[in-house]
Amino acid sequence: MKQGTTILTLDNGYHLWTNTQGKGDIQLLCLHGGPGGTHEYWENFGEKLADLGVQVSMYDQLGSFYSDQPDYSDPEIAKKYLSYDYFLDEVEEVRQKLGLDNFYLIGQSWGGALTMMYALKYGQHLKGAIISSMIDNIDEYVVHINQVREEALPADAVAFMKDCEAKGDWDNDRYQGYVDILNKGYVDRKQPPAISHLISTMATPVYNAFQGDNEFVVTGKLKEFDLRDQIQNIKVPTLLTFGEHETMPVSSAKRMAKQIPHARLETTPNGGHHHMIDNAPVYFAHLEKFIKDVESGNFND
Image 1 (cartoon, one colour):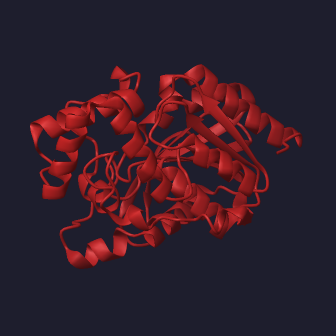
Image 2: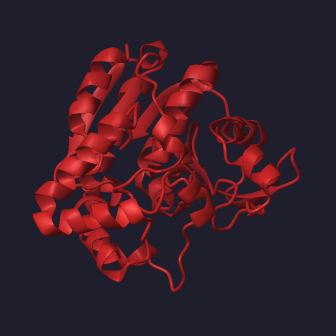
């Protein structure tokens, strides 16, 4: 596969921005979070995994940053493209159009949800799955993020946030200030300057439809997400990787590691939701070990 940027034309006529880095026989496809985030925290994976001979492909999902952005204000377009089924089948179409097979799939957060769903529906194409900072249901996530903010903020701040949420007062400056505090503690602990921008790169129509206003409240379609009765059917070698200071409960990850037949859980000290940035040396050490073990036939649960 050639390196660099390729614009894919989907069968639906929309265009996706993709980028491939590195050379080698091992293929890794990366799914970003959000929904509505970007590919950007994958950009150094080709460099970091070069010694293993890994070729890394990434893309911005429909609606995100460099890819086409449908008019989601049209109810028919929103119904068709703001759905689990659409984004899952988009992964499969990207796989086909990039010519990948017997490959590794990594997904962070929402991308981790897609990775689980892909492994269940299209697992015959996978050599391994890496689920980064995502659990198999939203109920346990909501319990955890409520605990997180009660520990991180004074009681009056939590009460104020809940009042704003009840009223739908999402743009309140004081409310968003508390969200910033929580983000710095549990999402982007390192606050990396390398992926900051002069404009927002979040596809807010997509994010709002699935998540809501921020990472610490769920008002959208993700409320429905629950694979607890299915993840035992993921048959490929699976790496679960979580930060030790993040929005996703590690207790749930421990349960998942027992339910998925061939799974390994690794946690990253001082890492938040984006622990591939917060503590990159540990994150990549875990990822490299997993790939090496699967490639050599030494992976065991």
